[in-house]
Image 1 (spheres, rainbow, N blue to C red):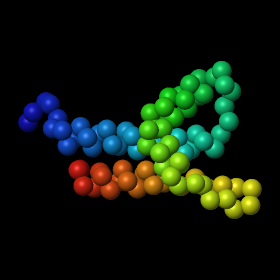
Image 2 (cartoon, one colour):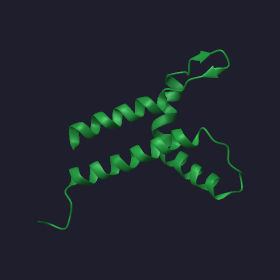
Image 3 (cartoon, helix red, strand yellow):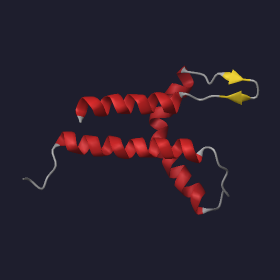
Image 4 (cartoon, rainbow, N blue to C red):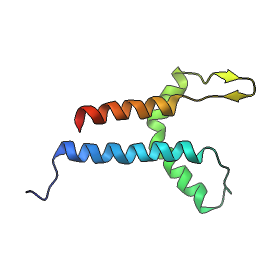
Length: 90
């Protein structure tokens, strides 16, 4: 038994953490926070960590509108892609 994890184990852990950040981003997007509060800082960090995967999809895939509500499927697509990658690697 080695103390240093192999690269697939590290990749799986990184993907799991990234998946948690994506889900947290989706959940936190439903709430408004005080711009000077700690939750705004946490939310900003999560957005910075996940923007590289979500923003390109938002540019390519516009959010469909139903009345006054628009549905953003970019996070769902990223979650599915990460799940597929985890199935292949892990």
